[in-house]
Length: 391
Ligand SMILES: [Zn+2]
Image (tube, rainbow, N blue to C red):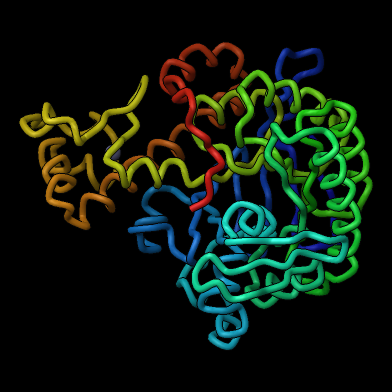
């Protein structure tokens, strides 16, 4: 057992480490934060605008969420971090009393802003909402996150797509390192943890350099960025095979940003990742696609209009407890709001239950033996689907 005594507001305990010599780096852990305990490996639903689309906090508790992610970029632009601070902080604003993580804003600046220029001091960009001009620096990104008051803030980074050419990746990785030091120096809030971001794209030497650099700084946790984009699963596996062995003796939680399909989550847990987030389960739900053991159902398919069965037999979610596939399929055809809520509740229940199954196997010490069954339940990720698309 590895327990880490920290004076900072996050403590991470590895409850069940991978056995020595095992063919897996998966581990069971417990992350204690100001607003509660997060059992790992764990998935964080994404509440872009301080809401997981279509769900209220009771729904979130019912689907089993123990922590949610909210987006710094979105809340800074609308309704504004200072307004949220005046109204008592993000927890009170969205009426969620469990842990929250806010991201750095870097990914949205790069992928969503109408136009942007990045220099060594920070990023200037135009809002995707109204075209207004804004500037984010590491210090500003930290000040925004301190005003929001999440349990975990993230250092401002410069992400690039995994397939970017080497010179672009190298430049962004070096800048991320300088910004990591500035983010740490700027962070004051003692009731908020701060995680740092490892970049390096798909270049093994840059990944290694970035892992060593970021892990050498006194962050409370380590994010792995620049993946869950346009890379293949094999490329992602190769990048993680550079990072995770270097972190073997590191007691901090490891968070792979942007990954969300059950098959991908299982692979990454096996490689040693503790935390995940993605819009994927909720976004595909709003297109009428629901996850079931072995794959997905598309409720927009006419065949479901006469199907009296629940989406998934035995699923405890709001949808499956009382409604048929036929009813939810009807709601989608009629564009009724309840359809989005029910499908989102189901997909998040499926995802969070899947993580529970993984943790149960880890607690019993039999994840390697359970992999085949878990893979069968996860189905395959859909080829060509970019898991990291912003919402
Ligand atoms: Zn269900």
